[in-house]
Length: 383
Ligand SMILES: [Zn+2]
Image (cartoon, rainbow, N blue to C red):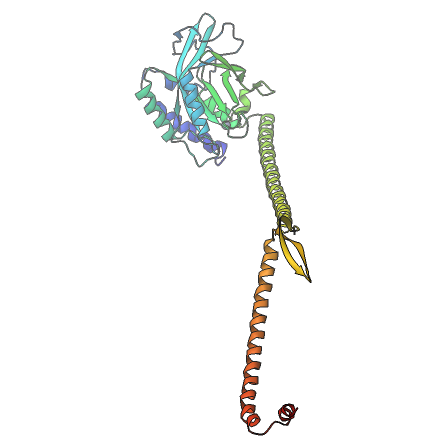
């Protein structure tokens, strides 16, 4: 909360005065907006005349004030609440104060968004611009309806009304049957309160399109109105601080839960990839081992070959084998083959060189050998 209570109070009161000046005469709204002294549930004694209408819900509803939302109004409100999960949003509820045999009830027929609300603040404030916008919409779209309450959101911190909420309720929506509606868009919880002669009171349920909807009611059902106004009882301030502390703690617990779940997910992810790595490595090893296994040659066919040994003819079987040679072995064999070929070539060259040399020496020796008489040959011939 950026403002102090006193600043807010002055601000809101100024708005109220300005609004009174702007409000069209004959509607009785300005009177209800400023009715901070007399707080009653029943519209009797006020300038507002309840509309005679049957309550669109069950009979004998056991609540201080029956609140009936039209489906469209509730849907608009929920949609607006869900638009911001970080900042609070607010608006007003418009409809009629009605009456049937069982007494008065509030019939909410539309929700007007507080579009120009101060969004920088962590807490809703009905600024001058907000009020202007709300009243323009009200006069343009719902000229026959009146403001029957207000709503705002508590994203992620429960639906208990804060001191400031109660202050706004008492000073700006203190009219007969004007309700305060708060919802937590994260949990969907709802709380409704209204001013009674004995203070602000929570409602245990309300009705949407005739169907009952539950409301959250804190342990202390009735909050003393005096506690909510500036300079109220110290106990009330203490309980409010406790509420804020509780909200803060629940927020921290939620953040911690989120972090833990994130860590858990991260570890799961890492574990998954580790296992996948191990499986792939093992699989690769197995496949490699299988492929490189040296299988013995398999005899496919025997071909008989006749061989002459001495004066006998012997039949010899020559086997045709199939031999799957692993790639590695094949490569090694190819390498060996190449090396062998290279060695053969070298050998052939050397032999060729030797022969060349011998040939040369032979040609050199030939003329000498022919000219002188060979004693051995001569001896041979003489024999
Ligand atoms: Zn609030």
